[in-house]
Length: 562
Ligand code: GLA
Figure 1 (cartoon, rainbow, N blue to C red):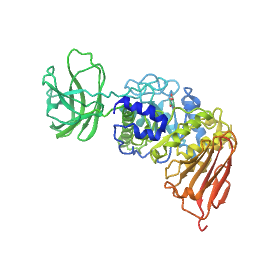
Figure 2: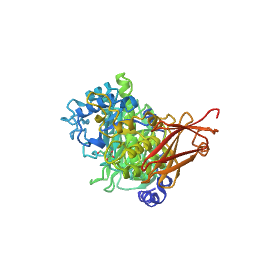
Figure 3: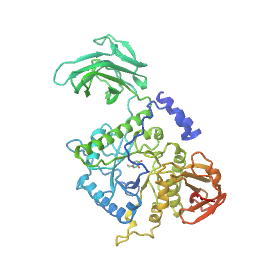
C-alpha cells in the first residue's frame, strides 16, 4: 500500500466512520508482532509529570520538592509511584561521549544522584525524549541515537521513558538496489562476494541488467515492503563481527532504507544517503555478527507508509530500552529496573493498532488542556478504543488536568472517573506541592487531593482484569459506561455531558447478559456509589440523577443468596 492510499483512507474514512472502522481500512504493512512483554505496566501506570503545570520551568530542586510532596501527601501510598520529568531536562549539548546530559545548571548534581534521592522516597524517576532529531522544545532527542540513549536511561536507573514525536523524520520507503554482499573478516583486507543474481528473491524482487556495474546486474523491487533478497550461504570462519558491505547501484536524490536480518533475527537497519556521486557503485558498510559456518542474510525494506515508519521507529526504541534494562542488570548484578515505555505520537498513526507490540502505553489524542472541551474531546476518541487496551499495553488519553485551569469540581471528578473507567494511565499534572500543609502533613481539605486519592476509584482503574470500559448506551449527551472487574463485579459510570442535571437508569440484568461482562445473573444486586460511598440494594433497575458535567460511578456486585 502506498502513502497516498493510506492517507486518503485515513482522511475520508476516518471522518465518516471513526477510528475503529478506519483501522480496518488503512493496512499496516508491518506485522502486529508479539506483545511488547517487558513485564512493566501490568496495571495502568500511576504517577506525576512535570509538563502540564511546569512546562520548561523545571529543576532538580523542584523535582525533590515534588518527590517529598508525593511521599508525604500519601500519593505514593495510593499508588502514584512514577515521578516523570517531561521535556526541558536536557542540556542542548550532549557530553563528550555523545550521551544525553541534563541541563548543567538546573540539574547540577546529574541524573544518577537525582534518581537515588527520588528512589529513597519510594518513587521511580521517569525521563522524556523524542522520536526525532530534537524534542518538542528543540533539545537533543533520540532518533538515530536509540542504542546509546536507551543505555544511558538504563544506567541512570530511569524507570519510565516517554517518547514524543516532534522533529520526526519518516523512514524512506525506497530500498537500495543491491548488486552484491561483500563479507570481510576484520583486518583481513579481503572480501568474499555474494551476488544478488545468485540469491533467493522474495515477493517483487527482480534482477535488473545494468552495464554500468562490474557484474552487470543488481536486485531491485525491495521498496515499499515489496520484496526481499536472501543470501543463504554466507560463510564465516568463526563467530564474530564482520564487515558486511552492501554493494549498491547508486540512484536518485532520495534516501533509501534497508533492514538486515541475520539467521532469522533483526541485525541492523541502515539509511543510504541521497547520491551526489559521480560513480554509480556505493559501499554501504555495516559491522555485524556472523556465526561460524553458514549464515542467512535477508535484506528488505518493510516501510510502505508513514504508519509503518512510525510503528517501526517506536518499536525500535522499545527494543533498545528493554535490552538496555536487561543488560545493565546482568552486567551489574543489580535487580532489573523495568522501563515503562510511553509512546507519544498523539494518535497520528493509529498506535492502538501496533502499540501493544512496541511499548506499554500509547497516546491516542493530541495534547490535553485544562478546560472542559479538551477533556470531553479526548474522552470521545479514547472511549472508542477499548478493544486495544490490555494488561501491559494501554490506551493513553494523556496526563491528568485534575486541579488545573478552569475545571470545576464536577468536571474534575468526571475527568478522573472517566480516566479510571478507561483504564487510563493516571499521571497527575498539577502542582502536588499544594497537597502538603506547611507542617508536612497532607491537606485533606484540598478538593483535588480528595479526588485523586479516592481509593475506590483508583481500584477501578487498577483492576487486575485490565479491561477498558465500553460505552453501552448513549444519547449523545448522556453516556453509560461499563467496566468489568476481576472479581466479577462491574463498575458503571453515568456521565452527563449536558449543562443541566439528567436522569439515568440501567437494567442490571441487561448488563450481566453482555459478553464482555462477568457479572452473574442474580435476583438482586448491591450497588455502591464510589464518590459518596453510599450503598443500595437494587432489584432490577439502577437509577441516578447526575449533575451537569458530572458522573456517578457505582461498583455493582451480585448479591449472594438473593
Ligand atoms: C508534546 C507532548 C506533551 C509534552 C510536550 C513537551 O506536546 O504531547 O505531552 O510532552 O510535547 O514538549
